[in-house]
Length: 326
Image (cartoon, rainbow, N blue to C red; front, top):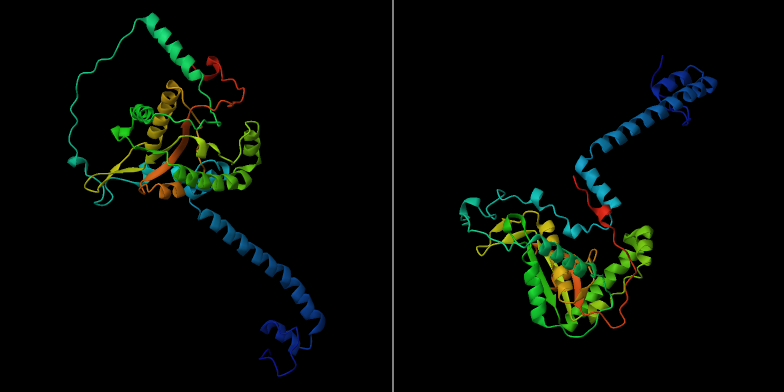
């Protein structure tokens, strides 16, 4: 009969009551070792199955959105989390009392519209002339410190403000910086983050692609250019009564306005660098004392080209490579 283990010196075979049966029967040696040799692989197999099941369940617990978000972060390091446009999904007008009620908005009256209509020959000539003007636009990193009339800057920003926007929300703020000390603080923030970008975040391929353009994290033009224009997108609006108003497609709207601004700068003979300082947005927003609903989209140093300015000898794609007529 099998009973409790006797008070004898501890033996490695005392691993279970079943083993004790063998011990009390006088079959400690070969029988116990044979039993252990059989049980050990079985226990190992059971342990592996349990661990595998737990691993599969943990992967299934991940939501599709979390996996997609992780993939985006890994595959697109150039996408600044600060400016991603997710307001259409996360900010709804019916969430709480902080958002304006549609019924509070007045209907917008409509008025007749008429536009200048040109003869076809004039249209063709004007289209060619405008193309020739913008085809001369280049990214210029050597900018002259020569002063630029402030009225010119105000006018090009007014021109940018004619851009279309979702539901005419006009979700843009143009911060114009001309103070030398403020420009230098902006440069310090940008260069500190850009060095990290070049050394760690951007990856070898991106850095190599930029090397042929002779660009790095040193941004002298942020001190030299007479103006810095920082373009912020407003993720939502704040009305005089402190209620929030949804800004639809705010990033697309501000991007269109930025393109018009580039064209307006070219039209008056000024140059710029289309700078998108990665991961600098929060610090620059705080430095410039902008509200939490604004996110930095672009930073443009603006001025005349320096006398010794050079640009890469690049060619643009021909028409047949960028248009599809159906």
